[in-house]
Structure formats: C-alpha cells, structure tokens
Length: 176
Image 1: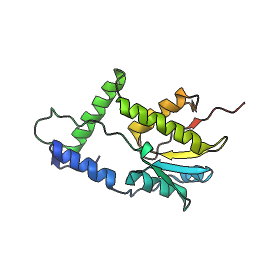
Image 2: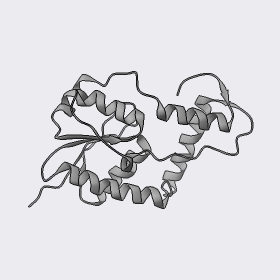
Image 3: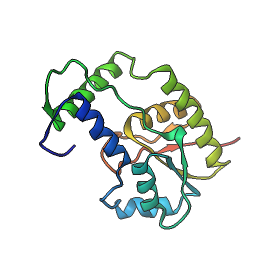
C-alpha cells in the first residue's frame, strides 16, 4: 500500500476501486515466467490487475479470464472516525481478516460458493494430467486453495505468502 494522503472511509473505497482497475508496473520474476511457460493453460481473474499479471506471465500466449476467480472484497472498517493514512486502513483490514480466520468465519457463503465453482472450473481447465496457472488475489486464492484441497488436491509444503508474484503450488491427485 502506498501514499501518505489521509483518507476517510469513502476515500478508501475509491482507492480500492482505482487499485482494482489499475494495471501493474512490476515484472514477474524470470523463474516464474519460465514456470508459467511450461503450463498448458493460464487463467486469471477478470480484474484488470490479474489479467495484466497473467499476460506478463503468458509471454504472448492466450489468457482465459473468468469472474469465478475474482477477488472477494474484505470489509472496510466503518468504526474508524475521520481520516487515516492508507497504510492504517490496510493494517486494519488485514487485522480484521486475520481475526476472522482465527475465529473460523473468514468467508461469506457466497464466497464459498464462488470458490466451489472456481475449483470445479480449474479442475476442468487442468485436464486429466495438465498444468494450469491460476492468477488471482490473496483472499480468494486462500479460499480456492482450501476448496481444491477439500477435493483431493495436494498443497506443496512450505509457507504460503501473500506477497506480489507469490506462488502457491497445488497438484491434482493422479488418476488411478
């Protein structure tokens, strides 16, 4: 999160809308571009930032965008009086999300349904033994990974980062 301007709640909403509509400036790591080149398909959320990221990974190949992979909006606090820097808004939103995760109520029913539909769609996109790169954002990526794991996909060991260009690897169970 960038910028030192003080934002009220409506300003934070406007910032998030503009952020979601913006493209990207940074390039993906070369190793990630190489890994994406080995994939059979590249799919992404239909949000402009995700599509732009996927296109950077695709190296001119086709990218399939779907609203099924769209990020879900975390609530912006309504109780913060006045204005605050963007970094404070971001910290409060993330803190609330972390508390909701700890309490086991981090996903609305419609988000879980979206994750279920997206997992089925990704499973189909992968094919019997293919590889698909899925470009989405942190909150929804967590829900999608959890849903894929519930259907038998296996997560690679290690810490799952939410940093830009971070990767979560999951593998489909082998057909017997």
